[in-house]
Image (cartoon, rainbow, N blue to C red; front, side, top):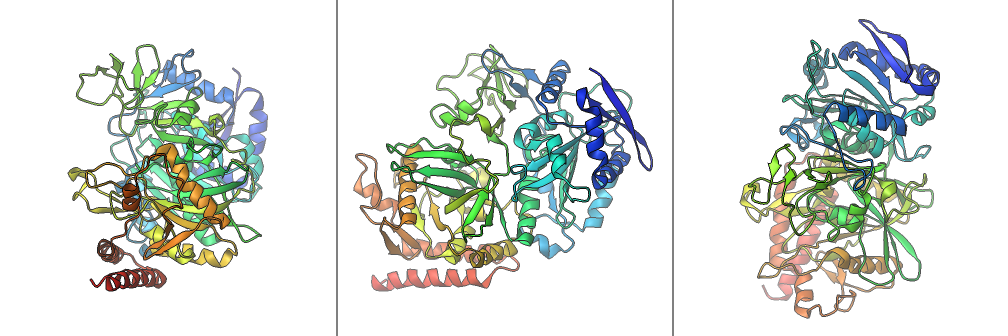
Length: 627
């Protein structure tokens, strides 16, 4: 392989930019025509001091070369090509397995702009911490420059970023998760701004020492500077800590951009729902973790003639259209899913997605060179190599796969992908669903009275603690809009931004809450869930069309007793319990919400009024009952 090297002179060092194969001169020309990119690359190279600099072209050859090199170095395991073609397994350091929320910062200029739900530090003080850490952090390593686009190339929705990283595994993942490579540079004009991201594992190779399989640093920082539209990540090679296009850009930075530019960046799936007559509508839905988000995104309906297709499973960028409707794109190009619990029974479409061209992290390795995790099959294999690289048998006390183990796969491989999944104009959103994991109180489905009430519903999303280790059993874990870890600015302002969108939408989506997890007195789930959730989507679909009736309740509109197309044999007492609204319990919940929102700065008065109105309706019901 021929390599053309040319020099980039910087203030304190000279580094080599390696451009490979037939596109060497083309690479040089493209980046030299972008002075803002060149200046930034030089600045970062001078600080990070890599041995080599590589501009990523996003090609399949580049992806294969990176993965093959990692295999040769013992840092990746190539899976059995006859069982899982072109797929690889990585094992992380045991200290680097998930997001590090305690070390994630929003460094806005003013503390109040970050709000009480984010960690904050004055930008200049944070930079005083970061600069010594970043100085020489890439010695002995290659600095990869990743041009990437969140959203379809050429779309008015889309935003361009550049990530600098010293992790080739990050490059491989970003190839799947974003539109990455030289075509992105063609979208940039000479003086166009872009979101800047610097990532380092924080493990320089000072004296040609041997590298480890998963370099990282116990000292970790994930830092966002929203006014500068920049991200700095130090010490972690894992997931959203390192793939800066994902939560860092697509939610934290993008939510701030959306507030400034009049659109929404949301932790939401997007699906297309088609009825037996061929009519189609698009729904967006926000769920905290462990609430059935991925299963809904790839739903296999149990109602004959109905079809659900996937636009995205995690993030939605939504903006008003000229026709007064809300349009959405999925800014991502792949799925970065949690493996444990995923099976051909629980989510067959997710399993089909990862049958080839996939990256796996921290799952177990079978003796025939395939992957396995808890919940994947009814019977456990007799022997595995677990996520730590140790022998494992069914008698082992530790899980074979880490609970947060992941798969990275292209959306293009999803059997339920929607034909419009990367349309540059997005898809029109007809309904927005908010869901938590609630054993009681919250009905199966409830429609908001209007946009303001729907926004109030979104602020109140919560799940009940299910184990004493997580906190007080039965207490609520709040996650407004499922955005608590991902909102890049003050959440009070975020709520207000949602309220303000109503003025831009003459035909806004209807808003709903859903709850698949309500239980009876014996602790059994009342609703079958999974494929039967299409029955709830059907009612929402028909409500949007104005052909399904609803009954008033103190908390919103709910289906009448004959309104849902129920599974055969579904008991009336189960239905009644699914929709039972206890005024006293709801008044206690409203008081709990008031207490929770006391910590929020800039909490909109219109949402306080919604709490007042809800309490008044609940008290009215009690008064009518003579209680």
